[in-house]
Length: 469
Image 1 (tube, rainbow, N blue to C red):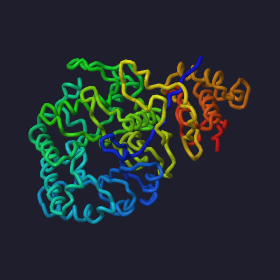
Image 2 (cartoon, rainbow, N blue to C red):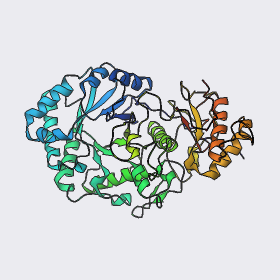
Image 3 (tube, rainbow, N blue to C red):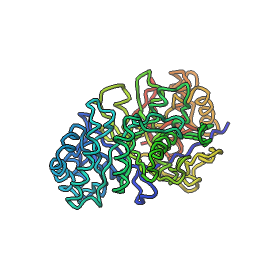
Image 4 (cartoon, rainbow, N blue to C red):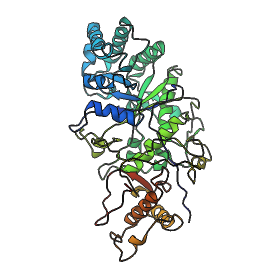
C-alpha cells in the first residue's frame, strides 16, 4: 500500500517583501541556560530569520543585533506602562535610551507598548492608550516616527465573542474605552494591530469538538460559519477572522493585523492533549510554508497579508505553569533544533497551503525532480508521531518496509530491535531507515503526518537508530 509523502519543505525566514508577509520569532528569556546574545544573532542569521521580537529592550541583545540586518521589535514592559502613560518625559527618555541609541545600526522597526495588557492582573488597561500616545510622540520628537511604528499585542481574551468568526466582537468593557482609540491611533499612524493567537489552547480545551487536523493546517472537512456560510479549514483562520469581524464592527476594516505570537508546544503534561514534536512541527511548519507562499488570506479577508512571529526561539526552563509553557521553542538552549522544519520552500504545487474544497491539492506524493535538500547538517532521526494513531502508523510502517525499501530486518521477531514490540517503536525504526537511505532529504520523513524529524536520539530500549552522520 503506497503512502504518499507530504512535502513539507518549509522556510523559516523573513521575506524581503512586506506585501508577501514574513515569519519572525519571539525571543523570550525566562531561562537560565540560554546562549549569549552574539550566538543568538548568529543562530538567527544562519537560519535566515530576519525578524525578531523582544519582550524588553535588552542592551546586550540590541548591541549584538547591530549591523546584522535583522529587524527587531522592542517592548515597553507592562510594569513601566503607568510611568510611560503619566509622564511624557519618561516615555521620551525610554525611547532615547532603547531606540534612538541603537537605530539605525540596529533595525528597530516596532515598539510594542506592553504585552497582553488586558490579561495583566495589575489592572493596567487605563494606562495603555496614553502610553502608546506618549511613546509615539517621543518617536516623533526624535524624528523616528516614520521608521518605527507603535502597537500593543492583545490576546484573544480581548474578544467577548469569537465563534462563529463572523460574530467576533470585542469585550464591552474594552471596545469603546480602549480598543476604539487604539485602533484610531493605529490607523492614523499607519501601524498594525498585534494579535497573539494560539489554536493549541482552543484545541486542548475542546478536543471533543475540534479536529486536530483543523488545528494543524492539515486536510480536513472544514467548519462552516453559520453567519456567512464560509467554510474554514484552519482554526487559526477562524481566530483571525473573529478579530477582523470585531474590528469591522467598530469600522476599522483598514487596519492590518500582525500575528505577534503563535506556536505549538513540543511537550506537555499528560493532561495536555495535542502536545508533541510532530504536532509542533506540523503547526509551525505548515504556517511558515503558507505565509511564505503568499497564501495568508482568510475566508473573510481573502486578500489579507499576514506577518507572523512564532513563539518561541528557545525552550525556556524557568517559565511557570504547565509543562507546555517551557516547551514552545524551535531550538534547545544548546542551539539544536527541537524538531526539523526545513529551510527550503519547495514542492510541485509551489508551496501552496491555501485550503479549498479540494484540500488534497496541498499534498504532493513525490519530491520535485532534481531537488535534494538535506533537512539538517547535524544528526537527526525520523521517528513515529504517536498522535497519528495505531492504524496510520501501521499503514506507514507497511509502506516503509515494503515499497519504500527500508531495511526492516532488525525489527523482525528475535532480531536486535524487535523489542520493544510496539507499532510505534517498529515504525520509528522503519521510518528512520527510509529517511537515512534517502539522504535525509526534505519531505522523506512525514508519511502523511505519521512521522517527524527530531534532533535528539530517540529512546528505543537497547536499540540505537543510526543518525546518518
